[in-house]
Image 1: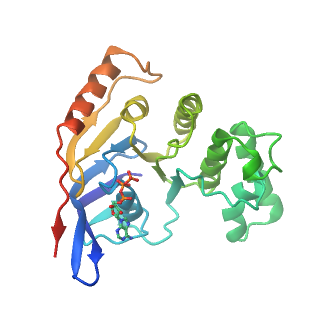
Image 2: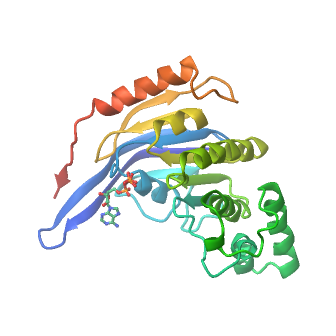
Image 3: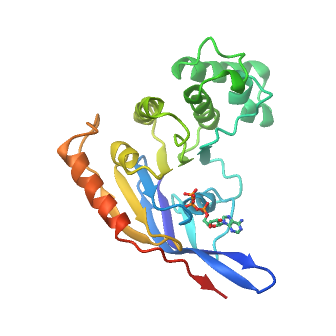
Length: 258
Ligand SMILES: Nc1ncnc2c1ncn2[C@@H]1O[C@H](COP(=O)(O)OP(=O)(O)OP(=O)(O)O)[C@@H](O)[C@H]1O
C-alpha cells in the first residue's frame, strides 16, 4: 500500500503565554511505493516521530495531508501498525497475552487469538517463552514480541520509530536481519525512523534525509543494490559517506513562528 505525503507542515505551541508556536515540519513531500522499505533519518528533534504520528492518524498537520493508497487516514486506521523503541508491551501480561492483545480487544475468541499468536511465536523464534513476562525477556525478544503484536493485525503499512535504538550492537544487527526476513516474507510497506545511517543503508530501498528542525526533506537517496547486503561493501560506504556529509553540512536552524 503506497504512502503519499503532500506539503505537510506542523507547528506546536511553544508558549501559551506569549502565543508563540514552533515549527516542527516544513512542507514535507514524498511517496513510498507499495511494499517498499523506506527509512527517514535526521537529527534529534527534526520531527521524525511527529511525521510518523501524522501518518498513523494520531495527530493532524497544520497544512498538507497524508494518504494511503489514495485514501485519507483515520484515527486508529487498521491499515497502519506502529512499533516503538520502548516496545510498548504491557508489563503485567505474558508474552503470548501481549501478542494477542489487539485480537482480544476486537472480540476474537480465545482459541482464535491463541492460534494466531502461536503462529507468530513459532515464526519469530519465541517458543518456550510464551508465558514469560516482558521483564523476563531479552531486549531482542521484547522487540520481536512488539513486532508480532503489531503484525497480528495484518497492517498494510508498518511505521517503526527507532525500534532497535536501545539494543546492543550485536542484537541490533540480528534484529535488522530478522526484520528484513519478516519483510521479505510479507508485503507490508515499511517506514522506518532511525538516527543510525548505517542501519538505514543496510535496510532500506530509499532513505529520506530531513534537515534540523523544522524538518524539511533535504534529499531522497535510492539504495538500489540487492539484498542480502554487505555492511562494508563499497556501495554501502559510498552512500553512507554521502548521507553523513549531507547531515554534517547542515547548520542548526530552529525557527519560531507566531
Ligand atoms: N505535543 C507536543 N507539544 C509541543 N512540542 C512537541 C510535542 N511533541 C513533540 N514536540 C516537540 O517537537 C519537536 C520534534 O519532536 P519529534 O519527537 O517529532 O522529533 P524527532 O525527530 O522524532 O526527535 P528524536 O529523534 O529525538 O526522537 C521536539 O522539539 C519536541 O520537543
